[in-house]
Structure formats: C-alpha cells, structure tokens
Length: 284
Image (cartoon, rainbow, N blue to C red; front, side):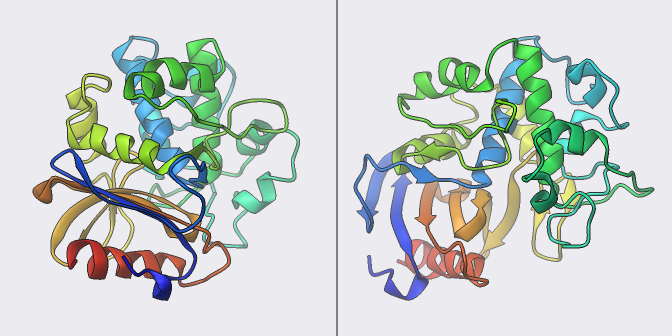
C-alpha cells in the first residue's frame, strides 16, 4: 500500500472477517509500540464498562464524587464519557480554563479538574481533563493501578502482552493519552467491539457505548468515548488520537482498520487519515 501522500504513516493493519488482509509497517515492525495518543480515552471507556459489569462501579449515573470519594463538580460518569459535563473545559479552545495544555504543567491533575469553573449548559466540548478525573476515580474504585486492572481484565485475555501507560506527576495511571500498544494490539481492541465485546465487555455496554449521545458537528456524533460517523457512506465507529492515529470499525463490512502515524505537528493530520481510509482502505 502506497501511503507516501498521507504524511508520516507508520503502520496500516486491516482485518476483514477476523482475518488480517493488510499489514504494512513503514517505521519499525510488528513489535513496535505506537503512541496511541487519545485512543487511550476509548480504552478507559472499555475498562469502565468492565468495572460496571463486575459490580465495582454502580453505573454511568454514578457521580464523579461517588467514585472519587471526595467532593467534586456535579458531573455523572455519563457526562464525562460523552464529553458533555458542566466543566468549563474545551481542548479545542486555547482560551478555555480547562484546556489540557494548562493541566499538564500542574503537579496535581485531579486538583486542576476539581478547581475548574462550571458552565450552565451541557453540550459536547472535548475535555481531556474530565477523562483524567474519570480514570483516577476508576483507579480508586478498582483499588489497584488501573494499568494492572487493564492488563488482567482486558489486555491479557486478548493476547496483548505489551502495553505501556503514561502517568500523572502524582503517579496515577493517565487516561489523557499516550498509551503505547502494537498495531496488532490496537486491532484486537477494534475487533473486540466488532464482536460485541467478545465475552470481556458486556454486549449491553458495547451497544450503549456506540449509540450517539452527543453531536460534535454536522458529520460526527459521539458515544461513550467513541467517535461515530460515515466514511464514503459506510457506517463507522472509531478511536482517534492526535496526528490521525485511528482504530476504525466498519461493522457492515466486518472490517477493522488501524492507522498509526507521527503526523503530530500537521494541522491536516486528521484529514490525511480520513483520506487514507476512503481512498486506500474502503476504495482499495
């Protein structure tokens, strides 16, 4: 597959009907760990679904205060999963008090979130800080590092034996982004949701996660930390990270496509990955 016109693409792996039909590495090989960036957030949603199924968390209507065990803004887990909380937080607005770039220099990321001003409306607003708080609360609820919970309950059963998480300055497992996985590991996560959770995540959670709960723009809707849209008329749900890193699932084609890139400094990174999907994966 010629991907030279799509910038710094590092791998493309595609499965159809559960069989890998494309596996190309343009930097490293199958063992290379890729920085998934905000695809990490979708993994956090998977782990919350598992925790709910295990009875560790009561459900999406639980409040952030419930799972943190300390005073917190009036947000439910559903609010945080759908990027529709009351937090004055928008990573796409440099002037937003909750912009993620203001959080990263802080020692206490949770403290940053808990101190954010509140807004009156609840509509989609891309907020990494809210997912950080969700992850820290989930880590407290499971009673162990979230990375350990993830390895035992999700990755190991999928055969994913290499996963490296980032951490906050205070040592909490970070759901902000930066989880390192192989391309095959990412593929297994997409296939898991294509197969209704594969016995690891409940089918009910998968179905609810992939329902549109918020509208991003005219083309894109948002589930529980999953992006929802059509590509060339094809229904798709996908994980997305900075630079155009993607895990696309096309249920009507029984197809999963992983794209990893290092297009981190390109403003057109997402458009490049969109084109690659339409022109090379769907059109190929």
